Length: 364
Image (cartoon, rainbow, N blue to C red; front, side, top):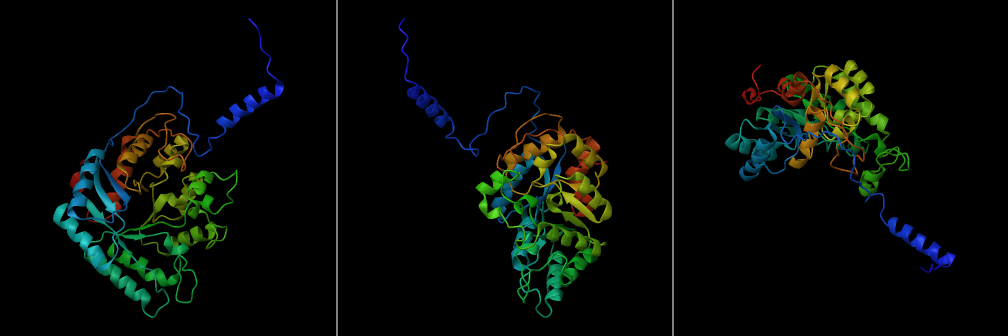
């Protein structure tokens, strides 16, 4: 056999060409399938019926509700809390549709429009409208992150979450015995430098509008501190801190806050990826604070709920999350005890939100 020796430059070009071809794939596309072989226990339906305290539904027509019910029954969802209720006639239309079609399966929260803070009588009018909305059937108040980020008063100043002009709103919720589910700020990484140390780099690259400067519109720490001060100043109002207050990645700190603020509860919507990467720590946290944690999902995508069930219910190891840009790491199950699961899935929500149909859930 004759051995043909190729010139060195050709060999180098062939090597570089092969390397170049391999490098055409960027980090965004790199998503390898794990070769790890471990026991798998996927969960398509929750072990106990659950209340989703964090959902958003703009369309609550009879046809839309029927479609939702079909998916809810498949997932074992007992009650959906629609946080996008609006106010006034818009809210009343949703409430009327629920009443006519599925009165025990849907709950609607009202919203407050913070445009006009600073006008004479704004606080009183806002509180009065909220009172009317609750009288008409709203079971709580949802505050969007735009409070603290976007809203400005009549003088052009940012409306802080703990602005005393908002106190009549929180007082109205206390008076009427309904909870406030509040989303403040966003993950701190959105305020951090977008560099190789930023854990949310891929998310910020693919969703560039989420990136903020360190002071846009205020430092993250300042906005979060405003929220906590507001909680403490209104001890008789029940609060559900959405997304675990963005401290799911620091459960030690979150535990300290729960100890300091007894009227604060937390929802797990959109932060299951943080819990699923620290199974031992998160399990201990759920057991310790089992009376203060509520189930929620946020975006209504039925195919994503099984990841929540699997993290909460099983002891599975190293299974995928459903959004790489949101969490590029694998999940582990917390294997929560049944008594804790029941509280997270439905008991805590039944205790916080008035007027829910308890017959939809196991009798104790």
